[in-house]
Length: 364
Ligand code: AGP
Image (cartoon, rainbow, N blue to C red):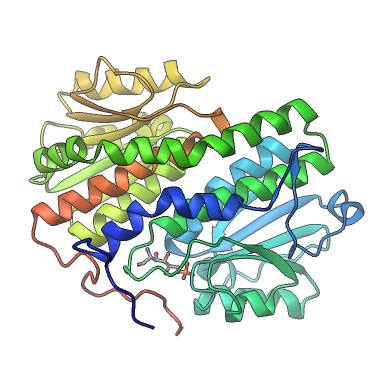
């Protein structure tokens, strides 16, 4: 199919701009206010079964793996089911123990990524229950899975994923809420999350309005040889995804670290030539994150914070509207999509088709 850019210069910019509508679509028709939960028609998992799940293992590659990491955090916090994410490409080659009480979740925008598909097929052959969190309806992974959640981001043309990442994470919030309300999440917490979900489209709109300022900051940092991205717990996968995005389209080397790990090694790299992008939400870890900023500043490192309030130690702060703590990662990634975009643009890169990459990797 061919799609047009609708007045934008690139598909990436178009797709970033579509996020308020895209998130609206993933929520539409799924919220049940009466029971403060969500209905996921294609899940194919009855409540009795949902109560017997002992673990959740999420599998995906690249950006979808990062969405899965945030998803695992959402499931642990809302449903209190131990959950983790792993690159599907690693999982399938380490002869994993396939456990009957574990629910496996395969994440893929295209639904065609070979490493993910092969992991799903191996799991199914061993009798595991596998759900899909997929964008493309009727794709190979969607067909192979026992059930799942469509993320309804709409067609994504740019090689790097933006709106699909945001929608996938939102779909995980829905799955976490659904499982949580079958298990121990209270009615009031369910209601709090639902209200938070409903605020997302307008808050994304607000972030997008800050594009000119983000562009200005991107031009300030565009000369860097390398960048460090840090975050803690919920913020760490946001840092991972933001660093991947920057690498993919600007070709600036970037790495992401948990803020807590800085002192165990990467602090040695900090100097004025290595700027740090720090994810600093207003949550229970705010003071811990501030301490990391101080450590970086003490080594003359430049800091760009993505935060809910101005950060004194940072050279620049991109302010993001606050949502519920659990849902903040959905919003905090969005300004960094624009940051990567404008950095790449300032460097004259071919944004929609970065060198050496394909939209989906359908071969081994
Ligand atoms: C493009 O390079 C993407 N950023 C890439 O990491 C992608 O997320 C990965 O290849 C998985 O694709 P999928 O979501 O279609 O399975």
